[in-house]
Figure 1 (cartoon, rainbow, N blue to C red):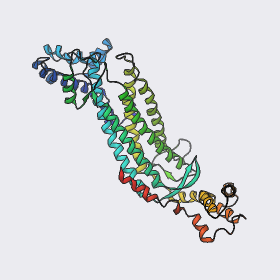
Figure 2: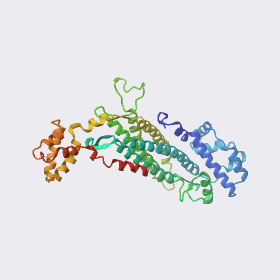
Figure 3: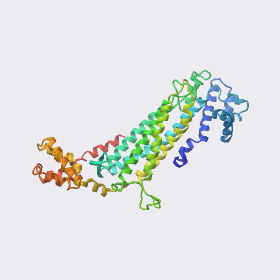
Figure 4: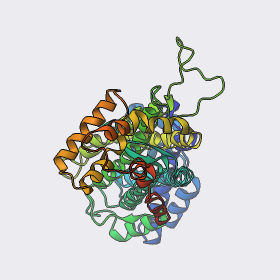
Length: 431
């Protein structure tokens, strides 16, 4: 994790202090359950629960010699337990502790981003209703298409974030598992009853079947859910960037007093936050490939996944957590230039009404192909700044006289296109 893009809350979850604390939490739960089942003396379990502690610097020092972080951790903790130390980690393999503790860390991190997704979704719904009737050009392929509203755009993003939340909830269910099944998953020195007790204490479910590890399809599902959410934020950020272009200038991300846009050009107001969101979302998305490759391991386990996920899991959470904050800030303080939206809407004299005119000509009895060619040629004239589309279509010899002034006015009324906007936006009440 890069501190520049990591919040304090998320950094704490994935820091060494919390990681070792989770490991110790698992070891204590195991010792308590083993004592209850008569597998180790009650005195040993009591000592492990009351006397256990760790020192990160000592663990690092020991690991420099052992080259095994769990062994280093156990060596340090054992030094405080006296005779009871022999019952610490009794019958376990490293992944019984590491994978189970990782699930606990992940669940803490999921809780953080879930709350932010819900909060951001609420903001999007507010903006959707606020700008329900703020008319602007809809663009396909980057080209003017037909009228939409800014509220419709926010509605679409609100629904997408709602789906992201559901995906994350499903991933949370898939990752809410632990395993205390030993070196190859056979419970040779543990037992299903022990696993059930330990997982129950920790708020997890025992994996129905495991090898030395929990299977990594669970983690791949999680990273995918995070990455899809990041892609939604990137799409929204890219929308802001495109609408903030100098020649469009319909929205604008917040620009703080004293902020500088360029070391060379004082006039610049660059969409740097949205660009940052886009860049980090790419990194997050790339982690899904590694997560998928981590599924494929040798036999009952190899360790090739471990080094990779020590990077991708904390980083993926850190990135999503960070860009959720930035996306909220951008949308909450988004500048909206309604005058520019209206100006762009009517650019070229109403070419955005071409389909309406086409259908009206057909309704007047004109052949569809003929109507299409007339509308296309007059619209392209307007596109090339040879008059406005409305003027050009009105003057066409085959069209002149087909529409009275009121009919012509109605053909170029954007309210016709937006008559179902309220119905669409009201669907937000379903999420």
